[in-house]
Image 1 (cartoon, rainbow, N blue to C red):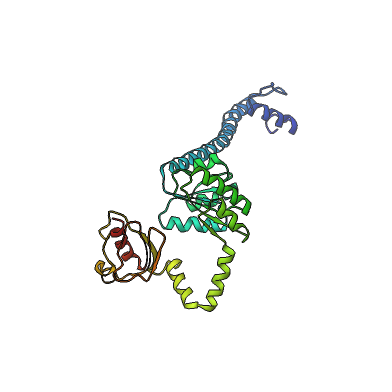
Image 2 (cartoon, one colour):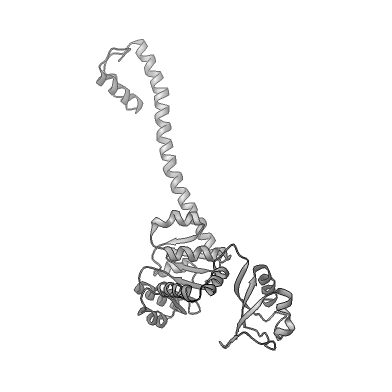
Length: 307
């Protein structure tokens, strides 16, 4: 407009066909100064236009590649783990469960149907798969045949029952913990194959009642189970055949004196529970010892009992 004294429409039209390399031709005769300006316009404006298009394409392509590579990395990690736990649902309960197990150095794979939780699971460092937990192919990808247990915390009791049936059919040895929203669903979940059925509402109500009736007991249990600031832990330890304590009595083991631990109960292989076991009680292969004490002492005892 300034050099050739063209109208706004003529100048705009000429600029657009130049930068887009369409080149329909000059709308009006161009002077020498106009040709110099056109050369500069093509070099600078065309380069900037191509740079902007390339930046947009790079952003789209790299975002897609990053997403594909991230998914591939997650799948490789899931394929490598075993004896892990599969948690179906990453709602309020699933999130707390996952984070608690990870703090205990237990591998976890989450199956979540809601894709909007992907960012949250990435931030939490969770291995996850997106889709329906009742999809057998997705359970295969989650390593159900290598898993130690499965926890169902999906939306409805009907979905939980269906999921338990499928999981138990795919891996009969899988230990399954199922959530029940209604008391009427407990028997159905047990019949479907769940090893343990938990009702968060029942547990919450009982805990509130115990907080009134037995506040000191509840305070101790909260300290042992959920207080990360204390060193007192309530733990269960399995006795393996390679342990040096097999066949040794509590009195001869010196656990109380050497480790400063209290054995609350011993669960025998046949399911018998020995509460406050006597001094002559012996450790047998397959026993599960419930102990309370300091975490570092529990680790020392676990190394001995596990061999």
